[in-house]
Length: 267
Image (cartoon, rainbow, N blue to C red; front, side):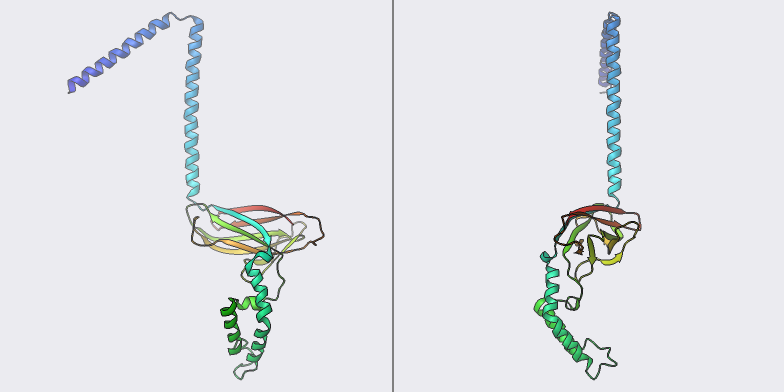
């Protein structure tokens, strides 16, 4: 067996020597112009080889960088829309809760205040109020917050979904939705999201914003729902010409994960 392998190797070497000798004889007869063409072809082939090798190396580096980025949280915004508040069920139901149950609840609370065990007037939600609360919940699914809501109703609702397209959980996520105060004003209303605060007045118009405390966001897809709804009042009249206004959505974590998205909507 070893002898056969040695013989095959010798034959292969002899064949290479034969082709090399034949190639050398041919090259001896080449003219200067032919040598120049051959040299150019060799140089071009070398350049093409190194370009291909560099391209493969760049592709490998890009893939490595992409895989490394995916190992970290990657926050993205999806399905951002601005819709009429009258199309949002929770806004409609908050109005219904106030209209149907506000007066009965107020009467029940007043009745509880007059009961013997009020103890200085602090027992607002006694037996009578609890009956109204349970009835509102069982008959219409309304909450006390909806019944007692006493603020304005929004004209528009901004909706969007937060997704984590990385492979690791994003922790302690906080968000902010900022609007131009001359066109829009965020408000707090039951069952919608956000806590309103005044933004930085670095330049007119005054920016008004909503803070969102999110917490942990697992990699997408997830069973948890990270859809947000922000209630907004329009500050321009119906007769005003249509204008475009920016809404800036920002999410960040203490670890440095950051997302900033500028949206534009026509009012």
